[in-house]
Amino acid sequence: MPGATAFPLDGELIAEVLAPFGRMAPALTVTLEVAGSSPRGAEIRADDRLVGWLVPHGDDAGTPVVTAAVAALASVLGRLVAEQHARRQVETELHSLTTEAAAEQHRRIDDELALGRRLQRSFLTMVAPDVPGYEIASHYEQANEVGGDFFDLFRLLRRGRPLSVVVADVTGKGVAAALLMAFARPLIHAAIDNAARAADALERANRVLRERRASLFITALCGTLSLNSGRLRLANAGHESPLLIPHDGSPTRAIESSGSLLGVFPSLGLAETVTDLAPGDVVVFYTDGVTDARSTAGERFNEGRLLAAIEMSRAGTAGDIVDEISAAVDRFQAGTPAADDVTVVAIGRRARRRRAVGLRTSQRGGA
Amino acid sequence: MALETSIDQASGRVPITIVALKGELDASNFTELIEDVRRLYEEGSRDLLLDLTDLAFMASSGLVALHSILRLMHGEAPPDPEAGWGALHSLGLDVSGGGTQTEVQLCGPQGPVERVLTRTGLSRLFLIHPDRASAIAAF
Image 1: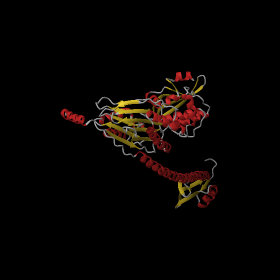
Image 2 (image 1 turned 180 degrees about the vertical axis):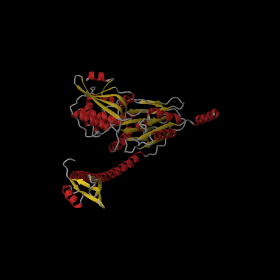
Image 3 (image 1 turned 90 degrees about the vertical axis):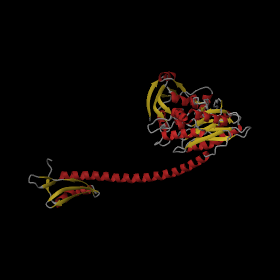
Image 4 (image 1 turned 90 degrees about the horizontal axis):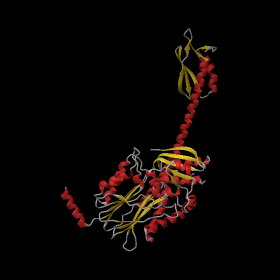
């Protein structure tokens, strides 16, 4: 270090040399630890925290010296360290403050959402109506957030007390979707009670939803089942097509009919489909929470796995089929938080007793 | 699979902003897409082509995104996708009257995406072209 003056190490001198730097950076103290006659070096402390050592070099005679330049360097380093240390402290304090505030807010929101989920479940916890000659099964699994799925099964008050089924999904999630669901479910229910046909009911509900400037979309499937004949009339407003599982073992097929989702267009353009359920037939309704379910590997459940679950269980009852589908979805999305509500409803027309006995016999014979 | 968005410009009869989507459009990312389009509108884009060729999957929240984008490009500024339907209802008159808005057009939807658009009837809101070239020619 040309031009730098070397000072013999001497406590007083060092104090003198370092004093100005100490004034410049009050958080910094540079002290010298002297062990016997040979000092170990200059400690650099920031806020009383030891952050480093400056080890003095020796002159030709082996006398340790600290140059003013070295001391200055120690001072600058110490100040930088002190500033950095102070910054970290402030950041830590800020962080703990915001974390606390955020945690408090989350607790509040969680409480409200838990209440919302309980309310929503109360809408959906229902005893399936007792329908002689038919078996009805359902599964509803809520997503982590408040979701927008709903379904409804009830007997109509008109002649023959047909069974009405509604399966619907409010697109989007959260409280807004749940509120719209809470509004739409009784609206559709009342519309079906007062309309001659399912398609008319959905058109009526659509008009009200448009007037109400409801937010979000609703896809809805609405049907009426005449119990004696097994005739199922369906209208579909943008929802996933239901699946018919024929009793004779022929392939499961979608009951397709077109129509736009609710709340957007002035008219839905619904085409009603008619399906006659034979004894032993089962119809499965579901929401996109089934087919859109995602595995940890990022795959979607899709219709293929839904059909596979149906194949596994179609020899059983409507309840067996619903159980198999919901279990398959659970297994598939195990380890990932359920992103959407999962709803499955199955209606099976019971096989006639004599026929059932015959089937059992032939199964024994085949085994 | 996440969603990748790439933005391109093309000139047809009007300057066209092309937003190409790749991956999956679902509840985890649809608000980001809306934000991207909001920014494009603020930067002056007025005619938008959504290229769906590489979009493998669209959940129902993607429909909410498409609808919000439509409103944004018509100068509405929905603060969030759940804000309301006034704008679409005024557009709706157009659509149901046999006309279709042309500010936002779609191209290249593949099987699963195309089926969602058709099933829900949302395809009624958009001109849908088989590929990017024919879409650009149509603006």
